[in-house]
Image (tube, rainbow, N blue to C red):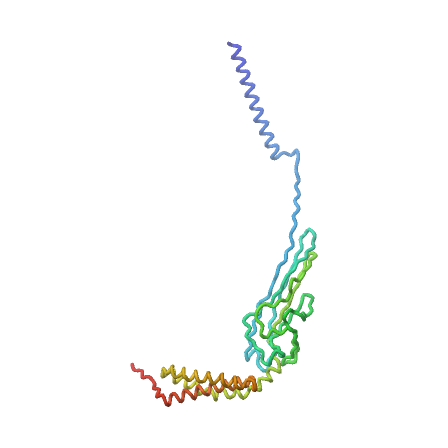
Length: 290
């Protein structure tokens, strides 16, 4: 019995010592793996960039012609902008090739030809990335005009155009490792001497507008004050019908002069009709009392 107790005690001591040894060994191994100095590992990671194509554009062009900016003694009116493409190659090969497009968008263009399509007045000048002037674009005609200051204006006739104009179509750009291409676009409203000289043909028509129009505007005020809107309507109908009759009778032989004659006839007849209606329809002014 005494012998069995001694064996049990001995085995217990051996088990405890073994457990302590395992715990100590495992703990030592863990910390050795985490921070030991017996060995080290060096990891090298290599990264590469990709090709990158970016674009930059200038401000929009806005042209507004009035007496102060586009009078008889003034030169041409112009505005300029740009479109720039920048390509950066990857850092592995340091070479890249890509394609891009350039468009010029014209919005709210209300200009019209003054002397016909052979006399362009709104000119688009395009300078390419190499600094030379572009002389061929799809659907556009390249023209040359002389302005009032005897300066030559060259470019594409866009006098009546609205919408997109293709300046560069799938243009190839190559970078080793960097490349930059810029288009400069200049829009010019040419103060053409021939246009100014042509306006002299209509000088006397312009002088006649106050003479023919004052009675119409005078009677407008009287009829509005008399609240005689129905009589105003009658005079407008007769004058408008007369305008179209005069124009379509004479426009083939007189051209734009027929338009001026029809307009002056319209103004004169409005004033005359309102005088007749006032005289013979007994239109009276309303009485306003407080």
